[in-house]
Length: 120
Image 1 (cartoon, rainbow, N blue to C red):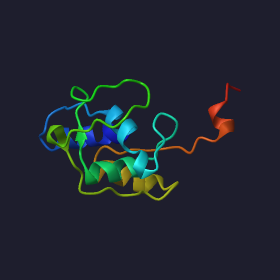
Image 2: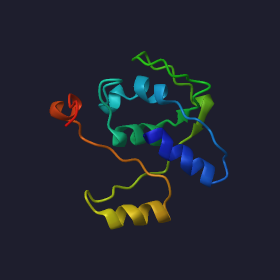
Image 3: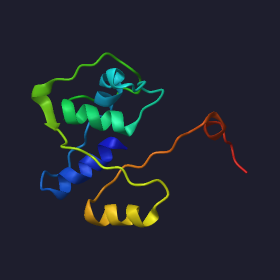
């Protein structure tokens, strides 16, 4: 989710469509309190990208499992200057953000009940 919003912002701002590396975030944000494939928070990913940048999917391909961080700053596609929070449950604020800012990231706190939901 974090990468998609930034990819959209890059495209809107004339940088073209660049696929950013989810694996870069999986491997390198443990010191930001993320837990690799087991749990991640967008804020922590955005803070990492702000501080270090992020590589492309081509340079840091997806593996589907946690690994050691292999980030190469010289291959970083971009950094971000910041991000904003939209008040929870405020649909008008969300619409305004999409209109004025562009691509956004949205998350859900998935409890065990939600994780194991099968239907109904």
